[in-house]
Image (cartoon, rainbow, N blue to C red; front, side, top):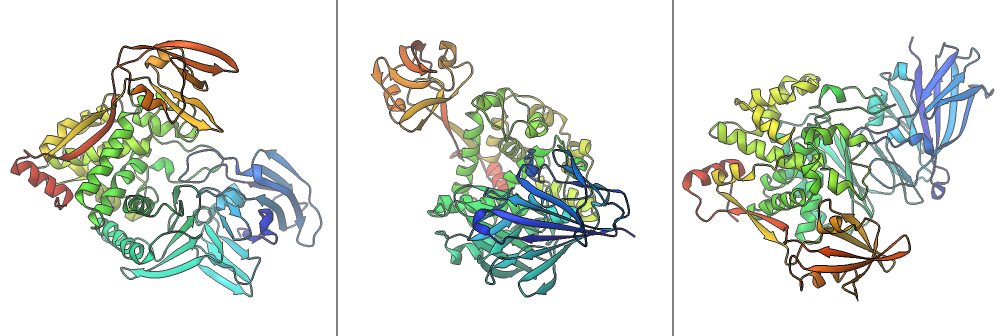
Length: 578
């Protein structure tokens, strides 16, 4: 008979930021009990070393007799069971990092992802797990997508079918606001911690419309209940889970409309992940190895395609108009086209190297990298237009998503890692080898113009009103430093370096706030002197300014668009008024 695993989570002194965790293993028969803690959490592709927050580890028998143990590796413990079948492990986890992928505990609430708190036995990772939550106060409530199986006083017990499900089910504990609602006959919960300027009378109907719009693509909702955990505090982020999501958003960034739409886009993004990634997933992300990196070249699709759909779903739900949507696409184009790294890193390479690059930015990141979120979004957009054009409007990226759902995800299966592009071709009904060679496996510029005129669109470029220098600056404690020096730029050629403290331009003091204005009075090809401190050494370098470069891109409907192009645009967006 397989052993049983029961976790208990206490938080008796929450202002000290410590969760107290107990794991009780019953029915163990081997001489050694091997325990591991995940080094990462699914959906956030970085080894975060959660065991660095673990302390005060002890192992005893059920009667309290100490058992010998030793740490085998950074996240692995081996307990000598001495023949006992019931083992109790106790430890504390320091939790003072408020992000969607970590854990946070203070006097106002407790929040955790399972990967941050729980130990597992690799051999029994598919075994059911129970977790009991012990809130520190009687008015603290517990919200999670896991089913409640027992409640006694101020003790709440939940059951996960496996360690995977336990890791995939975050908990919010405290006096947070709980708003239940029903969509398409399924119960949903909005659990909100923190005050904000969100207009709930507006958000709740919009949220319901988003859920219905996304469900319409796949013909229904693939769960029995769903939980939105929302933290209003400093920061931004979202993390998807099988039947829930956690959103982090700045409390006063929900008005006016532009900021509110960004929050809706985040909501739509994480909710769409319940299909794309959590169920529609490559085989390399089918069963997670929590002890090391899990590689895939398809994050451009898992995240980038989701990024394409998030703002599109807000539009399809009737919340934004066509001008707002095209403005959002324009902003994405601007971000990519003003990132020098687009000429260096391939999109598939960005997906594969996320473990060592995306979440570990440096001053050279803009020069050498692109985000698979960002470029993946634009490639997915162009892919959608390509399919619609080649099929005369009979097929689209929607058909790709439905094929992957019907043939794989709805059956509980992942698609083969190396088969994604061929499956997209199958759903599209047209050859895509050249498209993918250009967009995924080369650093050539994306072929916007190839598609825009056919859909009645045009892309215009706004150039900087100043000559090109090629630096990005930041101000901290009254000092202006160079945060980025773009490779190949006039500043780079002159010898300026990231980290230099900017002092003067042509002998006159200059700062972060005044640099652009000062440059606007100069002309391209002018030779200027830039004075900086580098490791406390004063130096002046001559820089010959370059021609102005592109600053913004604007996507709009062509005034001379013909009827056929407008019909294609109408077929894509469904509506083009506004």
